[in-house]
Image (cartoon, rainbow, N blue to C red):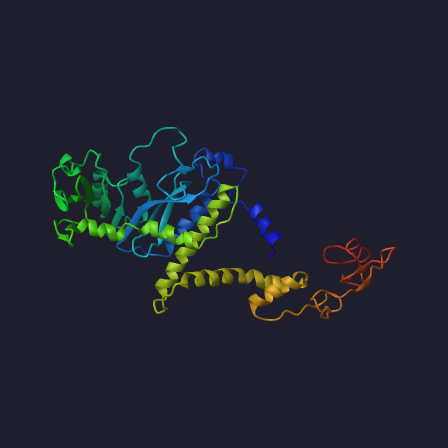
Length: 392
């Protein structure tokens, strides 16, 4: 398409019904994009089966405009943006389901146990008794969540704990007087808690319902809980890193359009993972994902390109016809709508001068001709198709 056509589509594109938006925003601040994001979640979970370990974490999509729920996280590279909670496969980094964080509820009441609620919402499609393991950080991990997942849904959890939480014993949280690279374990009702001192005066506390051992490994005597956590904790962060490498992101002042680019990136990344899993015989090389995205974009555009190739009005433009021919791999025969003959062109590729407009009172050379009577006619006395005023 032309640049002007792209600008017009980008300017007028919307993702919901504007007549009911204000009413829906009273219960959903992200109402302008919620329908499309729901479609994405339905497709993501439909075409992929998660592995044994899934990761729950946050993604901060960079955006500094006004949304009503823009988040500021100084530890992130972008610092300002739209926060999205994701659950991803820990090995392939496939996004399974996401949830946009819109801040405080419209009622103004402060929500308690946000982390527990988010984990249960994101993993609701995994409540099938499969025994999968959920890996998360200290924002989500709690003893009540671990018991609820284990008893009600047959799911295990592995995550770090905030040492200020009430369920963490003081002996586990206090590293003073303990030797470096030492570990402390606690067991209660199939729940394991571990406190590891990587260096002096620093303790790391983990909780797990998938481990029930005091086994350590490596020269630094790290517990097995920490080793498994380090292997599986980066599902969402790795997905976010991959999305930043190849992105469709464009500058815009409307946050629904900006977030739509993130939806396209996530969908394309998920398609790439499915493609690789179904074609294990293909060799791995550096630009494989870039080549996949390039071919994917061409295949998505091909039906529309074929339609434009058969449109005589569009294919008459020299630059457009060359671009279409490069995509479809064949030459387009430009036929005049009235005479059914190929149009003649000069050495520059432009149409030859047909003559002077037969309607104008003054001499006016033109390259257009009426598609019905084939008489030369100027732009002033013709329509878009070019037809003269008398034939029209």
